[in-house]
Image (cartoon, rainbow, N blue to C red; front, side, top):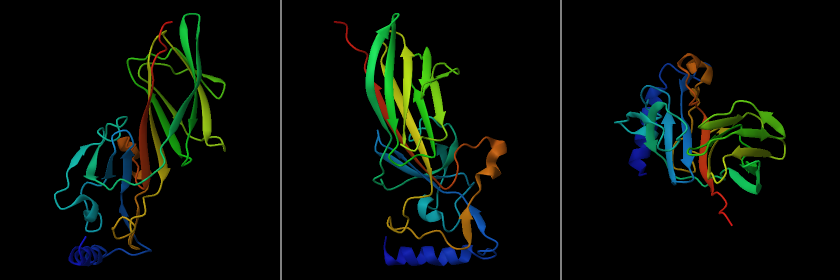
Length: 232
């Protein structure tokens, strides 16, 4: 970004602060998403349109699109713009073992979150059908296809164990979406940081719209495939 562009952003930011202050801040929405599988990353916002400060992320001709290309488990429409790829640790899913019992494939997994995710959403994609599941040794009752399991709090070890029961010879494809609070280091990426007259929009303001895409969050997605064992 050239010095002229930066000066323009600062000028517009100063103009945008008119009527807002640290004691009476403007509410703005900005989040970041990275898909480790595709290598694509985006900025997104639940605001209807960018203001003078968020315009540096979304540009003058910002438009609203689906988040599904980067966050496949989400179906919301938001302001979206390409973002720099930040080197963030992604979720890890490790196969501990598997076996066939009573004609069913039982897969034991360890899920680990190096960033200690605030929320984790694990989705088993078709064609697999989950017949039974346990989390940390406890049976889960809400089973279906496709199957999604949300973890609100991880153990202190930052890992959890799951056991999934599938039809025999069924492949297992798991998509993991992790959420943490905050934004990437904006200054390090060449953006002007949050102004003192603006704060992250409280997520409670959108609850009646069932808006799951919260502001002030970092989302990281990755996929893991465990092929069915071949017949001997």
